[in-house]
Structures are given as structure tokens and as C-alpha cells.
Image 1 (tube, rainbow, N blue to C red):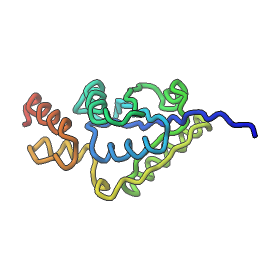
Image 2: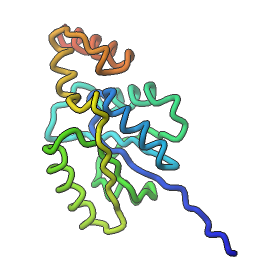
Image 3: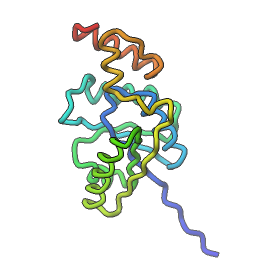
Image 4: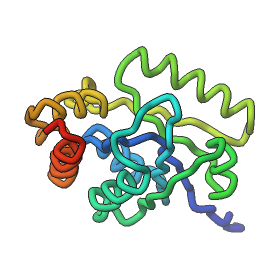
Length: 170
């Protein structure tokens, strides 16, 4: 019997990650168990005012994913489908928390599929303990000095504290 050569599966987990939360890490970790390689791709969302620069977000992601061997951290400024072709990836991994996430992500998946029919989107439901968690919530709590240790890794908590002191809100 002829053996079929297995192409490594490469998935891209795109997002703004401003900042990375335990919810993001949950999706990244679970995706790393399904795909041979997961590229966590930081985008600069022009519709949002980021707290952290792309380089700062990448550094935080590299720190908190350092023990996941098949995860790579990168960034992109182009269309996601163009970035994926450059990386020879055919799967987008998106985490879903609620129905409102699904409506938006379904629209994005449809557009990406229209732009390149070789692209598939895999939706992963957030674990129940992270279904309420968003970067926006974390920033709001941290901005006013609230505890975020249960929401983000320690290095992210420290980075938030430093950032809000730096901008005069901490």
C-alpha cells in the first residue's frame, strides 16, 4: 500500500491580543493540540486604539506561550488571507465566547472564504470559565487598579500596571 505524505497542518490564530488573556491562551493551547503548527498573528486593528504596541503584544505572547513548542508569534498588516498564503496556512482558528462573537466571526469567515476558497475557519468555543473575558474588560479593570490576576498571566498583569503608571492612570 502506498503511503500518502502528510503535509504539516498550519493554523493561524489572528487577533489584536491587547492584551493577551487567559481566554486567548486557552484557545491557543487547545489549537496547538490539534494542529502541527499554530501561528499567533498579531494585527493592528485600525478600528481600535491599542494600549500596547504590536511589538509589546508580541513580546507578551512570546513570554506566555514559551512552553508551547509548536506555537510561533508573528504579526501582519495585510489581508489575513494574503498573510496565510505567505505562511502556507489554510486554517484560521477563532475563539467564540457568545452568539455576538459568532455573528461577526461568521461574516469574517465568509469573506475570507470568498477571497480564497482554500481557507477554512475553525471555531473553538471558549472554556466556560473564560466566556465573559475580553481584553477590553481586562483593560477597564486594570485601568482603575482592580485585580486582574485571575484574568491574565502575571507578566501581562505587570505590563498593564506599568503601562497605566506610564500614561498616568495607575
